[in-house]
Amino acid sequence: MQKRVAAIHDISCFGKCSLTVALPIISAAGIECAGIPTAVLSTHTGGFSGYTFRDLTEDIVPIANHWKKEELTFDAVYTGYLGSIEQIDLVCQAVDTFGTSDTMLIVDPVMADHGRLYGGFPESFPKEMCRLCAKADIITPNITEAAFMTDMPYMEAPHSEEYIKDLLSGLRKITNGKIVLTGVCFKSGEIGAACLDGENLEYVFTPQIDAAYHGTGDVFTSTLVCGVLNGKSLKESALIAAKYTAGCIKLTKEEYPEMKYGVNFESQIPTLLKLLEII
Image 1 (tube, rainbow, N blue to C red):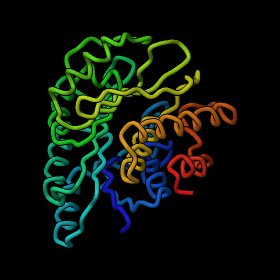
Image 2 (cartoon, one colour):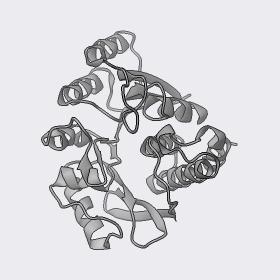
Image 3 (cartoon, rainbow, N blue to C red):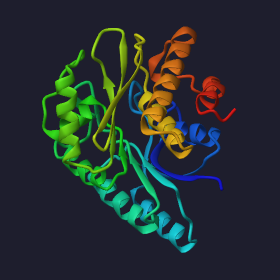
C-alpha cells in the first residue's frame, strides 16, 4: 500500500524551501504527501525584502480535526519551520488528533544556523521546540539548533568528536527518538551527519562544496523521510539525503550561483530515485 506523509510547513511561493521542496521530493519517491500550511509567503525571508506574509495558525487544528473526522491515517508526520510558540503548541495538538500509535513523527527543528536564532524567534523558542522533539521518532537538528536546545556553546567547524558526542548526549535527554545531527565536520573538505539510533552512533559524509543555498536543510530532511519510509535504515537514509543534497548544490553552483533562489533539486530527481533504488 502507498505510504502517506503529512507535511506541516509554511509555503514560500518562491525560493524552493519548506512545502515547495517537501511535496515534490516526497511525491517523486512514490509517497503521498498531504500538507498543512502554517503560513503563505510570497518568497522565503532570506535575501528577499518586502515579501507578503499570511499567517495560517488558526487553520492548523481545524485541518487536523477534519482529517480525524474523515478517518485519514498517515505513516508519518513531518514538521519543519514553525513560526511561533503557538504553532508548536498547535502542531503538538494536531499530531495527537489525527496521529495513531503507528504514525512516525519526524521533526526538523528549523530555527537557527551559523550560531544564531532566525529573526523573530524569542530566546525561549528552542526550549519550546524541545517539547515537540520529545514526541518525535526522528529529529534532524543542525549544529546550531542542537546547541541551543541543549544549552551548549556553538562551535564552528571543524568539530571534535567529543563535541559532537556531547551534543548528541544532550539531545538524548530531550528525546527518545533517533537523531540525525547535520552539519558535522571533522576535517576540511567534507561535511555530513551523525546518526544516533539507540546506542548505535554512525557517521555519513560527502565532499563539502563551497556554497550555501537556502532550503538545503529541507531538501535533506525531505529526502531522509523518503529513505525511511522506503525501508532504509537511518544511516542509509542519511547517506542518501547527504548525497542527493550535495549533488543538488554542486549542480546549482555550476549552473546558477544565486544563493537565495535555492537549489536545482528538480533536475536531480532521477538521481534521487536511483539512490533510493526505486528505478
